[in-house]
Image (cartoon, rainbow, N blue to C red; front, side):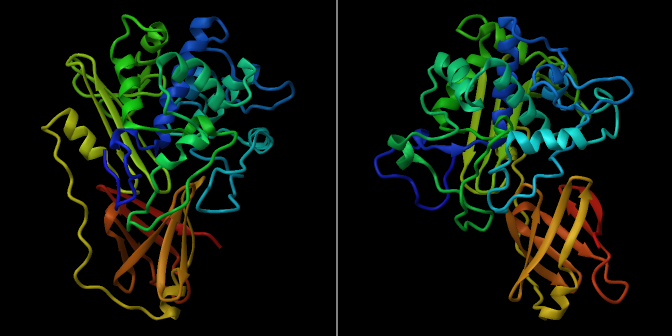
Length: 399
């Protein structure tokens, strides 16, 4: 694990520092589902609608319904984020998104494909699952349910949604990829997608329980949660929240996470009885470090170096690029200008600065992002092309 700068509280052991772990929270939502199944409270094939308040409309398609298993295995047909997320504060995108807004989105959404037809990573889907399980259990909040059924029984005393006052001095300060301090994230109805804060010590306790399903208070639920259930991309499977990849004879279970100022990665290999935790309080991916620790044959990727030759553009030239570009139906990239600086921000993510390498080309070196704007016609750019990690997305500019 690592921390940025010199923010460690004096006298606190590094493994006791609290980090936002982001989407690793999804694996605990998957475990809550498995535990509820073992308790006889729910079924994996139970329709989501049966857990929500009477009268709540849940979209269906081709006579297929969204089930609890489909939510946990990212095959519900729901988008990555709800279209009505619309955060008041872009630096804290999930704060204030409550059950009323969640139900309003569900009631008006049309699924683009039938549930179960294909996979699409969805913060909305897993957050919705966490909310539904909380409603069924009659718990005051998702965080309270996690404490009652997972962190309490496992002895994880340093994993919370809301950090107790006595431990707030141990919370790391999050930073964006340029090491500028950013505010923490908060969650409401979608807490199950990424709300937890934890320490390296607690994450190792959690992984130890996931490694050994022969004993412990959650052994049956852990075994069910880590059972692969569906394909999830080339050579990969997905369990209840966990990604499963590697050779069939020796797979690893893993998940990563990210918030505005933190990145995280956990993995475990039951065959070798190995577990890895990587926590960082900066918005720079640590996936390569985590995978390398699990398997030294996986290289550690060096980040893109800042460009040697940069351009200083006029305000008029930058304003041609300002706008909202649709990377996907529910994933927008907003380009803004402050003075002579240009910034990008994707839906539900932190803002990042852009460096010009040409009149139409910009990079964000820490994340390996390159943006090329189409300036073939007079006026605002009509579209942009995003390149990152070998992938390419072309996004049209919204009117």
